[in-house]
Picture 1 (tube, rainbow, N blue to C red):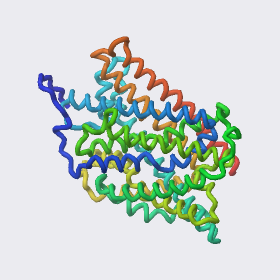
Picture 2: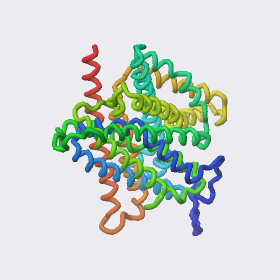
Picture 3: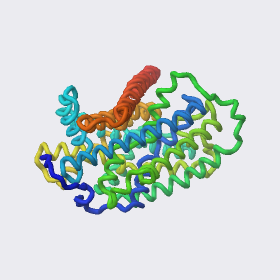
Picture 4: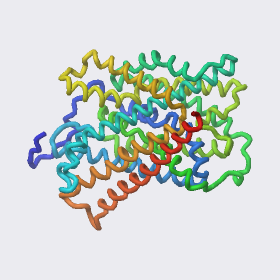
Length: 432
């Protein structure tokens, strides 16, 4: 892409040509659905690992840092669009271009930046899809088991192949909005039921641990990252907006959507852990009494909502894989082979779900590894490279900002990934 030096101000938003753009209301609905999912239900388990007071403080800090990092990333991508005079750039291209103009000791990374980010994006959202399959299967099994038909969990996982493939064939984000709206409604009703149960018979808060052993913190960190952030979908939504200028800013749609989600995470986590303490399970719905109708209804609605969300979370995986494959094979973007690849991704998620049924460990591993890089480290590096030639502001404030994001993401990601892999290995050793 040629960088043309002219005196006129180029606004990329005014040059976008988008088929089926999303309204602000549709963006808000999609943001809620992208960030409120099974990670939210695992938050009480994360608070058990961290302690309720430590969990509240850390959730607020991590949430604010992550949302701020997303602002840094999206503003950096917009600035690159202005410099290159193009309407839009994806995440991998933005990172590569930023590195090319950054410090000399980082420029050698520009060649591998696209492939690296594509891989992590695809891996993360594929991991989310695997976790979704496990969650739906677990909830269906608990429901059917209650009625006396005990069947192996793997049967439910394999049985999901056709339903998941059918919804995954929907290609356009705007066409997914009705599914997202229905999923949001189902989740709202389900959470009303969850709060009804977790707010009853609360014991003294002093019986719960305020600050747990530090060894449990990596599990907490990874679960919170997984619950809060969905970088690829958040970027994809912005790229499809009718009014993209309304996305960022203090009162922008991004803050509204993720802020709403963050408050819900904290409430579910705090009261869920307060209610069940050390008995809290990987998903808070598994603690609800199955002999009553409302909890069974909540499980069914959650499973249905997650099923309806599968295509949204898998959108980035197919976008990355198909873009790579179509460029390599010189195929058109609308080629029928894309549907074959979509079905193959579903089959891969199903097979991976069969191999690992430890939901909370999968969430922590995917969150620690992928989102530390995508949501913290890479935004810091991108901003550092963009500001390298023009300066970092008074007292180098933006340099300290970028170094903080990189350091925070690196230590959190490395420690969280290590402990998640260790716990997964320990779990498999016990099963053998």
